[in-house]
Each structure stands twice: as C-alpha cells, then as structure tokens.
Image (tube, rainbow, N blue to C red; front, side, top):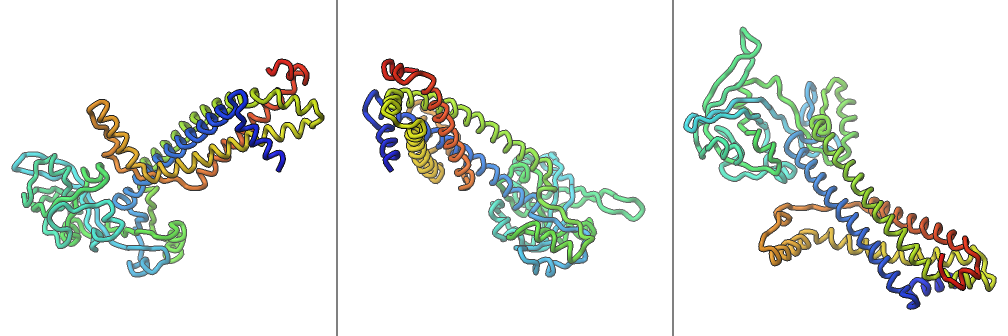
Length: 399
C-alpha cells in the first residue's frame, strides 16, 4: 500500500512540472486508444455490413443443390431459419422504345421471400408488387440505365434447353411490374425478379436450387444436411463469393497493418513520455537508494507510477472510445457542421450510415498491448537510472 501511495504521489506531484507531464501522458494514451478503437470499430462495421448484404441478397447463407431432401426436411434442421427454392438464369433485356439493352440476371422464388426479415433488411420495394408477378421487377438503377417506365413492355432473350440442340435462344415480352432498390449497387444493377412459375415454364426446373437462411451455427447445419443426404451439393456464402470474400479478408489484414503503424506511433510516444517522466524523478530515486532502499523497491515505485498513469489513460480512453462509437453518427454530424461553418461546404460523412462495432476481446487486446509497452519502457528507463553513480545523480539530476 505504501508503494502504491508513493507511486501515485510521484505520478502527480507538483514539483518540476511532474503533474503536467503525467496528465499529458495520460491524455496521449487516451487519445491514441480512442483513435485505435474508433478506426477498428468503423472498419469492422463496414465489413460486417458488406458481408450481411451478401448473405441476405446475393448468396444467402447456404445453397443446396442435387439433393433428394424436401424443404420440409431442411426446415426441420436445428439452426435453419428459412428455406426456399429459387431459379436463376441470365438474359438479355431490351427496351425497344429507347432502343437500349442490357444483360441481366433473372431470379425467381417459389415463396414470398421478399417479406422475410433477412431479405427485407437489404431489399426495398419502391413501386408495384413483389407477389403474383406477371412481368419483371427491376431495380431503379436498371430503370435509369434503360430509360424504362412503369408497365413498359420489355423484350427478354433467354437461353433454354432445346430438343435438337443443347440450348436455343428464346424471346418473350414481359411488362414492368415494379421497381426495387437494395443496399448493394452491384446486385441492383445486375439483377431482376420475375414469377417462379413463368420462369420455370421457360427454362424448366432442372436447375432449381434451395436457399437457406441460417440462425444457428453454419457448420452444424452443413454437417446435418450431409448426414441426411451425403450426395447433396452444398455451397456456403463464403464459397459463392470467394473472390469478394478474399478481397474483404485482405482488406481486413491491411487494416491491421495500418493499426500496427498506429501502435508504432503510440510506442514512440510512450517511450519518450516515460523517459521524461522518470527523468523528473531521477533525483528522488537516487536519494531513496542513498538512504538504503533496495533497487527492487525503487523500481517498484517507478513501475507503479507508470502503471497508475497507463491504467488511468486506458480507462479514460475506453470510456471515451465507447462513447464515440455509440454516438458516431452524432459526432460526424457535429464535425460536418463545423466544416460547413468554416468552409461553407458539406462533407459526405453524414451520408454514409456507419454501423461501428467492436468486441470486448479487441478492446482488451489493445489495452493489454499498451499496458505491456508502458511497463517495458518504464523498466528500461529504470535500468538507465543506475548507469550513473548515486551521488552523481543527486548532484546533477540527469542521466
């Protein structure tokens, strides 16, 4: 207890600007920690949002093909949230009024997937209806590209199985039944929807597949499906989006490299700050040694001083970081207003819906790393104190 009180008194004593130095170090640790936590949380939020969009719209959680299992059997598996059959094919869409065309992917569901919680998170119906479609449901992006209006007649050309040839072109005309938007620009610009029965009558149902939304452990669901039907073809969302998923993982790796450079900056700041902190109390340390205190005792006081400042800085940094992450949109709005007052121009920060998230394990890792660095630099600084004779330190109070 005596050592702790002495360490705390040394850390915030008023002599030789010690208190100001300690507060500067404390604030520096807190600001560095806030920066690390906020950047990590924003990057995690952006990546998680992108992955959620992929799973909700593009590839679902699992795609099962070549199986004898019924939807009812799949639905009964623990961890499965929703099961539906879908067809997918490519087509050329032509608006003869505007004389524009675009290749597009046509999807059709045998169930009302549009109203499910997962799908509706990323899908918004702008006009028309999503059920009992007589024609096409296209995105607002495609509407702008092809200059399409509601109930326009569009010519679609498919490739379907033929009788004398493997595949043959097939053309039909369908009206525009509505428009939609999604949170994935690539998906919106390349996808249209139509009725399952109409598409099945054109290309057949031999290529139909089953999509699954998972609410439990994905590996357990895959294992259970293979137990029921070992010959089933299962495609996970990671495999379906292999290229994009790999790119996102590479982006995450680069994020950690960037954070490592921030760690390096914090290391340099900690090293210099710790040296200055010990320098201010070098004379007191030598006097303690002169009156008989052991080197271990003096070291423990200086280490305790570093621990007190580091822990207080980390506590302040975690609290501020949590507050900034929880109110990130308000912070960005405030920053945008300040920029507008100064420059007269708005930023794009308020237009992006940031969903910053960070786990307690990540926070703990960052805090432990900074804490260990502080201990390391304090211990190294203590060793440097004893390079000089005790009396020399007392007289000169310098390294």
